[in-house]
Length: 276
Figure (cartoon, one colour):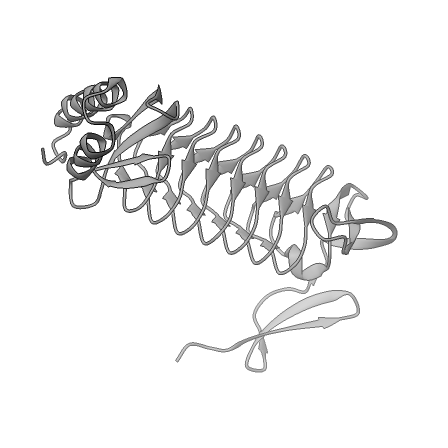
């Protein structure tokens, strides 16, 4: 078994011990809570405190308690940003602007959450990832590596965005989907289920289309098949073709949908994993 590490706080400082042996210098607290400068959290009205860096008096953002921001390392909360609940910011991570981190979310490594972005639930931003604009992360979603999520994009469920991938616009990545490599997902695309988008060519959006003037998104799943998501429909391309014919027969909407299916098959053949 490895050595047990004990952290103790004595007179405003932290010391670290292994057993009874001290292995690092005493570290002065990085920041303090300003008891006279408070506000209510934007989510549920709980009391938050502005922080102030002890070394130089720099004012930071708002947290609920010292559990939200590590007293070690370079992690910092600035501007009007809020971190509360069981959320935690540590490592060299930054939360700035009017961003919020709540629930049991984590921001670590050199990750940066800024703008009006909101990270909640059990979501985790790490590595050198950036989440900004009005982007949202929740569920157990992960964004890491050098990935970026911005605009009004959402990443939720158990989805992963990593590598040098970019998710922007009003795009949504959810379910157990992965967007990675140097893929770019944007617009109103919905990447869902077990989709695997390694390159931008691995997905296609068509819309407005059909009887609902909705957006139709095609992705490659982890077995190499093609899935379609539009309106309340999600499933394999071949099943979608059948449903279109059953529902619309040979009317103009069927013509639109089936033409889109043909385009999707041509597009996906360009990928070696399309399986069509």
